[in-house]
Image (tube, rainbow, N blue to C red; front, side, top):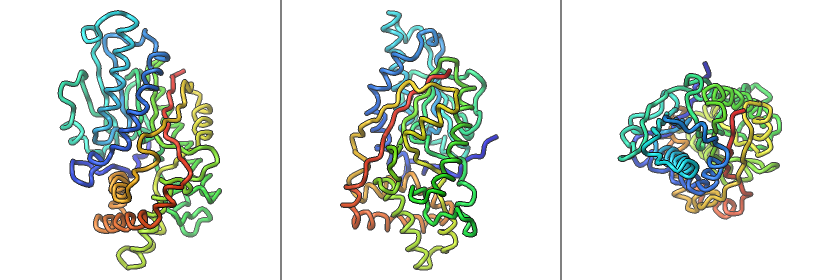
Length: 353
């Protein structure tokens, strides 16, 4: 059984919730919709579209993006079925959607928000997606949206002040080669486990669709806008420690369990795993650019994704104070953010071998 990552988005419907501040992620799904439709039309065998068609979202969070993702997939499958058979998909097909996330995810909010008039049956699947969560051959298409960058844990030595790998930053900035290698090694192990698990659960010939953020080859995380915001969070935590609000030791031993991989690294990990063929690797132009172009919106949306993780280490009050400082730092450094090196938003289409 894999380790469940210490990561969860803010649940519920409140002003700090991921549900209220995930429009950036949703915009990528819409921007990539045409490419996704083309991939399903070209790469999904009609033989797989039978009476019951199953879609699984791994790392679904509490909505609403998961609903957009699975509906886009269902629409594409129905369109392919109608075009190639001339038959009415509504009369011949039933859809099942499996929503997976960690056991601490807010499934209550997720299921309370299920769209009215949806054309699918739904079920929750709690558990870490780094291991098996479903029986063999359970689904036809799987999707992972903005969750393919997580690791199951922080690499060994990263948070140990006596280790040569101790990382003073709260994330992998890319500037320390030894730290970067430790993160990449951990990410490779976890992603290999994830791909192995999905290969068991996915029907032969089925597809995995991966949406997310990456780096262009040779670009360091802290050279991008997203990396700069991560640096602002770390600097804000250090400010709070200097003010005596939180302990410096807690800051020094804090690190995030994620790694934003370069395109070449992603390709190599998938190739070496051997369970899937890369059918498409699309660089998607995000309609919002690299980040929301407003310091306040930037701070609030980042808090929706990172706030619960910070709260578990430093407490809710310290987390809120930290993001107040993040907004200030973002305003002060806004010209640097605007001139940052570009990151990459991707759609990767994998077909099970």
